[in-house]
Length: 389
Image (tube, helix red, strand yellow):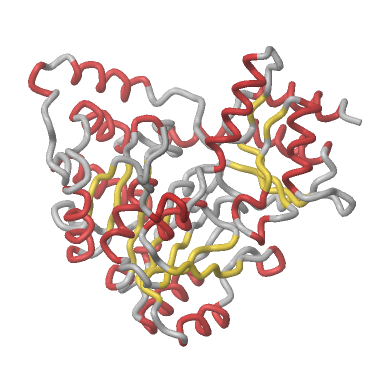
């Protein structure tokens, strides 16, 4: 039926999330019996700690635990998040004023952007980087300014380039992500100090998206560990990767009380709080001891070895110092573009890996392998890749 109804302009400004369309293709192949090994999506496949699941179940059986909750979450949850930050990052946070639970840190990208970005404001986004930074900024009518991350600079920002962008004015927000997705590069304290200084120098809010700091990484860092960072910086964090709770949608935003208040105002107009049993289970997860992280990383270390063999079999090169949930590899010299390369692997080897171009122009010429598949399936993928012509 034809009519004169048009969608909002933002619908035409953005594309469907790349993974949504690709996963439909993979699902069709599986429905046809092709048994695709998925090394694409970064969603942990393992269970959360059993005591976390038991806490959820016990709480869900209580008849008074099924009501709406307030946007700021349980006080006990904010206290657990504050303890977690102090224990793991050495950062002191006031649980009543500087911590806000989120329904996932991806959703937090939207809440933070709504709180700070007006139409026409400029937003610095990493290239390559997480697609949601660009998608959300575009939805809000911001002007997106990609800043370069390059292999020969260790996938670190070029501060001469950043200062040039800032000198032109109008930049409100800068998105940062270390350990970096997709490249696996790790920040150090010096980089974080430079970022805080840059934000203060130009009046730009630095937002650090920090969900990967516990995966194959012996030195978790928070941007807020830099003295004075709270004045200009915000950090997003999540239990999705660190605690195998991606579907539970449990994240947090931490910053100074004023910034957190602005974000909470946005959030309170969008959702009705999180399910109380999920919040109580998250408290249990946040108080897990170091054994949890050690066991988690034993699994990922074993998978990483197989991922490296897959990269070798594909003729790709990679930096062994990478951290996080993925392995980022450079295509062979004679390879076609990343989309053609990964489509060939998908249709000939029945292995789904991600082309680097989806993360930005600087991602072209690279591929990404997820560690979120059991070792036996990754070994199937390895044998299939070896058998390719």
